[in-house]
Length: 595
Image 1 (tube, rainbow, N blue to C red):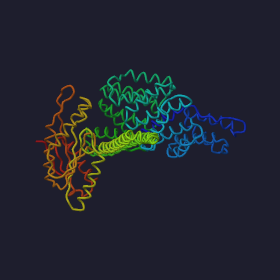
Image 2: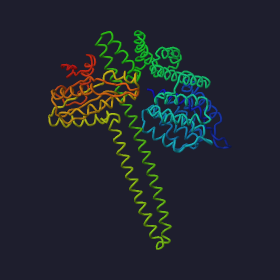
Image 3: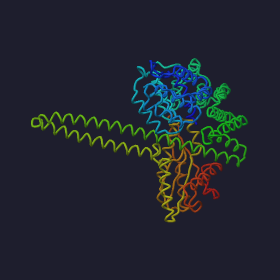
Image 4: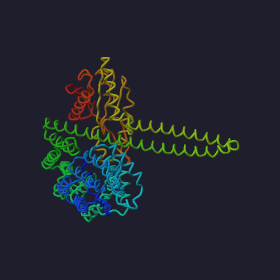
């Protein structure tokens, strides 16, 4: 997973914080030989991870240290070893008690930061965000004895928010790190995530020289394969997005040997998949096919990862061009499976971020309410001493307090409602989000099953939508999506219906009680409306788009939501393959072509 690669960077950068040392006083039980060995292993961890893993096992054969500080430091070393071995849950079990109650404040903060990193590896995004939020609030400044550890915490925040697709927050903490007296390795990491955030936010000022400068910084910090490999992928994507395919291919070719030397499967797989995508765009089909297969082979333990989705799409396009429809369909199905898994994880990340953000806001409001109540109680105590003289003042204060509490309560209710709507509604089109559509559709299918009522599912996908994004930018793509949603809403449905955006340009509509004829007529009206919709790009260009439709119903699948989605999806892609801008009624049914 991408999180494991980010985790490698984060663990390495923990070296920016010096190891805690047991205070040595006469009779305190400190074992000096053990102390020196633990310090050596802690340093070895970021120089030679396999050697650290192998040599740290000897620590478990020693008698337990009598010094509490040494016992806690030993536990932290064992947590690091578990992390490098990929046993993230064991690593959390070792480090969590230290994060809560370690004697040394430095070790307590280091362990807390370490646990946040592990949460990314176990995909426990909500728990990781809660831990991160608590640590950031408790350590707002990098100063004093904990300066280095707070810098590492900010670096971890930049990594974690980047993993959650929150580039603005990632950039903010990366800049905070760079504004401190950071170590060279931390500067390398901070610059990397600052540039990555600028890419995600489509910063027009980002230039090739920024990547060259980042490489120079990381080399001076003696960073090797992993950091430079990440930088190469970012630079290649930057060049690809600007149609500089040859330059992007040259960057990957220059770094392939270095990336392969890291032996990190995910980094290698991403490089192979990106290379395959670029080679196919450059017309170098045999090389593209070879790199795509290499990406899939390298990702055999993560079949639904991003490299697999990219590689399967490349192989689908190659086989489609060859006319091998069987192979093309097989690769398309694998691409869809991987892509759906990625979309679901993206939704899980967004839900985790919104949930923890809401919880944090509630805590702040509760704290403000508690503060306000305490202030009121203090006023009441003072006013009680002169009750008769200050009766009017007391009444005013109590009235203001009640108004304040009502206002806070209303704000809490409003925020809860807003966050719920954000989670259920796609903000761009106003349609139900994928998760909310699935929930509504599942309930409708279950209800229709009990009443033996027919349902029809209409799935449609915008044709060549990627070209609009590539040629006119994502803002133009957003304008097209809004125009499509307005056109779809203007078409009256024959029966009660639920419509949702289930992918970037893919939509689904569940028609409750509709026949096949109803659905086909409705889909044709939608197709015409979408084909007539218009959007204006920033440069004034008139943008239009068509859509391909796939229809199926419970008379074909039974009352099974997943079967409805799968069959309509296959029909939709058949419409794509048969020329687009048409309607396919079930997989084995007939096509309604554009007039």
